[in-house]
Image (cartoon, rainbow, N blue to C red; front, side, top):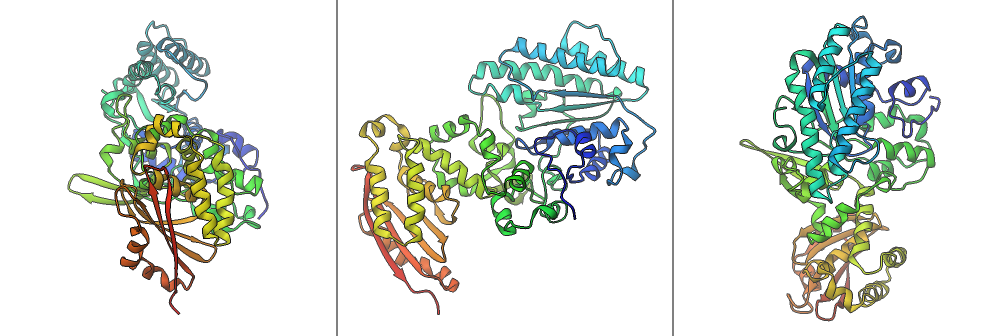
Amino acid sequence: MSRKKLPIGIQTFARIREDGCYYVDKTGFALQLIEEGNYYFLSRPRRFGKSLLLDTLAELFEGNEPLFRGLAAHGKWDWTRRFPVLRISFGDGMLQSRAALDERINELLTENEQRLGLTVERASVAGRFGALIRQAEQVHGQRVVVLVDEYDKPILDNLTRPEIAREMRDGLRNLYSVIKGQDAHIRFAMLTGVSKFSKVSLFSGLNNLNDITLDERYSALCGYTDEDVDTVFAPELPGLDRDEIRAWYNGYNWTGTSVYNPFDLLLLFQKRQFRPFWFETGTPTFLVDLLTARRTFTPDLERVVALESLLSSFDVDRIPTEALMFQAGYLTIDSVRYLPGLMQLTLRYPNLEVRSSLNNALLEVLSDDPARHGVHLPQLYDLLTANDFPGLQQLFTAFFASIPHDWYRNNPIAQYEGYYASVFYSHFAALGLDIRLEDVTNRGRIDMAVLFNRNVYLFEFKVVELVPEGKALQQLRDRAYADKYRARGEPIHLIGVEFSRDSRSVVGFEVERVAASS
């Protein structure tokens, strides 16, 4: 197979097809959506191909047959029928007032009028949008297709200013409520975005949307599957470790097939380096600030249990941590438990990129000096590689000792019980190491296994003001924690780490090597 152009940053279906780029065929999904219903809502994290999906739907409804030759939809679509398509996207720029939002909506409506050869005279936004839909059907002889991309961006851009965010929400509700009222004139409508605002707050009146965010049939609607990587992108794989690709970038799941973020893979194939490409394109400081303000015990993020209803309760005035993390793509679905009338979801980090990068970002606010962990992480890696346990103790003792007392006194995050264990855990997680957590609590005690360099490191953390000194290593022994790892046939190291809140330092660091099974 010959190599093709990598469609990095391209969200236009025609350009991908005409320029000979790689394309993962999603047109079968498009047909399924069109055949099964009329009104859809889809939430996916940023840079997952939502814009490309909507552009593909637009080209299909507009009947641009040459673009679909060789694809799943080509022989199954009536190319003699062409539908008027209204495209609305809030992806460009930032809007910071209701007046700016209404002005932008009017600009978008004008663009659609010009493209469809229409002229609509209405004073209000809602009146103009409704008249545009009716006139488009009348002039073009087919019911209208409405595609809304980045439907929530004006709100998300203003979450740190709740008053403005509420104004944006009300302005968007004024726009979207028109869609239901024009049902008789609409063939198909789809809204996509990052967040999933509650229907009451944003879609009151628009209660006919089919939310396919957690529909297992459409889990792979956006993103690349393992099969896509092995087939479509087969020419790009030589020279790259296939298992490493999977560990670093696969794992996003919405109750069905797991997928990769397209932006990650395309840049990996271009640059041939494993880097946090997606994470670096805009992880909001708002998210990190929220996690620290809420004193999030960072190991808890390895495994979060929540009801589906909680993940859908996102609103300007109420932002559950779990909902924000899930909708933004920093947590994904690990397993589902169905109860009578309820769906219980267990969430996890999707992959090493997110786990490593998010913990790296959190380390910047867990200490007074954002640059300090940039020096400590390489040292930690080298010490672990050499099994230099005295060096490990010295490293972390020096780390905590270097933080000024004033920072502890003035920073609430340093005053909760899980702070020390969070710092310790986040150092290892930021390195992208294979970490297994056995017992996660909010009391500053975790059992952490690190599998690295053909060694097994089993950690127990204690705060001596809560548990007598000398108990960390003893607990590892008493629980026979090493037994489950003996079959690996690798050296096992029990490491008991004890912190003191009073002295703000590591006060105990005991290591014991146990034999693996023969």
